Image 1 (cartoon, rainbow, N blue to C red):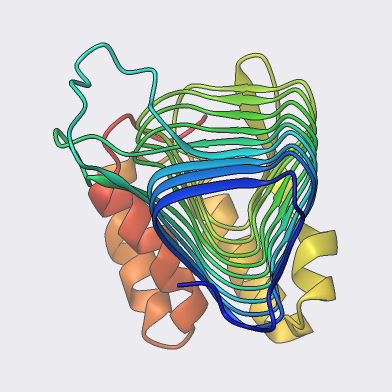
Image 2: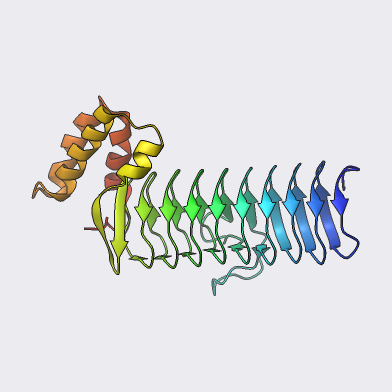
Length: 262
């Protein structure tokens, strides 16, 4: 069903079970095919491809040559009905690829709200991108990667499959991340190593001085105290009783599969 206020260019091809919401525009030579739901007030520009079982929310801007919902590049994928879910108010720039999930993991790839995905960013199968993130030009999120809210992965950086980039973390350009980046941490290099807290990002997002001091203390416990992570965990757990933001650090130490960058 295409809403009567949607504007579809005559050269666009729309086939399958497609729903397009109010005031959404679809540009020339765009191809939309499959079980597709597109919400209201989206701007889908020329030469975009949207396929598979894909849901796109409201108020997104999708630039030319972007591909959303294409088959993933996992060799195990056998055509199963897996999904892509995109939230609201995202900017998806030229040639971004967002691939559908796999039945071996989450069955869906998810992009939250208010994200900027820059030119040629690759969002692989079963990736979870939170809200308010910045994924830079030519950045690669490998399969099963999670990127937390307000995190940044800058241009030409690659995140190894199954890694997590924590909330408010920042991965500098041309980095190779092969272990988890804890929340709030500034990481850079090949392989990426920690360079303190992402203080600029934290201040921009309203963290006050007292909370920043608590996070700096927690960072020192992890990286400069000489303690093992097993010794650090109870210290951070006690701090988290006063500062809920520290709980994110406790969580990643408890749940990391690949270990954290050191």
